[in-house]
Image 1 (tube, helix red, strand yellow):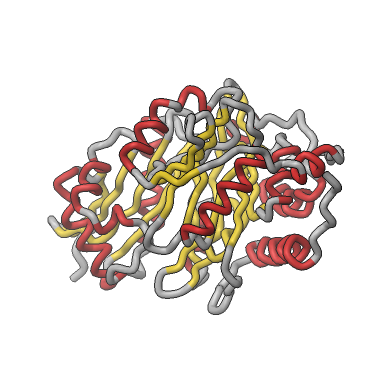
Image 2: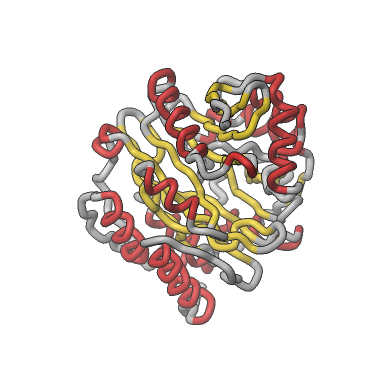
Length: 386
């Protein structure tokens, strides 16, 4: 006889059982180190910005899913795991619905995103059943036992979409990607921008005397990042990335330029979380030189996001070899409006899409990404004269 499964919010004393569950299901092959470190997971369970759902039979935890949220009504859901003998009961879907209902009530969450694995079609179908919209693809984002491509999905309230900032023009090379997202989410049209030639010229001349060096000191990096959060949302910043904490710093000697990164030693995945530029060194120069440093470190994949209305930075990112792979409408709340963002990625390894299973328009996102990769990598535009 099947026993009843109880859904509840996890508490710190559940940490050891949750770690054991991930270890049992993934055999130590899960990319997030928090799921294998009991002390770190216990600390997360005590934080206000985490809402961790577990499914239990009596006192035995058989399922887990995690929500992390901000004060601006934005959240991500991740880390779903189900004990093997409890599958086939829609348990992941039930935990996600339970957690979302709680967050809507206590934290007024309006936007939730999830990334889905593509080794099977099941995660993509699950999020689609819950109303999540498909927004793009992260090619070869992780590498554990093999290469993994993930898909980006998001769940929006009506008010989130209605509060979008739309008074901007779109970089024309984003048009094919945006049109897929527009069709998926029912968004209004946005006109194309005109990109001045000065953008390309500025990039080709971006070889200033700026010198950056790598500082591999996680605690120092986090302290510097926390101290500079106010400036990272002011005029001297160039990017941000929610729900990530930096563990790697690339800095000029005078600290006027600082690039905050999260670097995974496990699979050499890197995220540019924030760029502090108080001396106006310029986005092009910083991104180009930081990318070289990261490549020399052994990074195989870099990712960052840019606001969709910042066409010149988008142009610079593409000229630096980064490819737009996802478009996230209504992502970040600034004042009373939510702004669209574009996710950029760059892989330093040969793309590998063997054993990938894509559902619906996710195949369109992959085809669009490959077209842009071909243009950037095999058909580069001639550089402007300095």
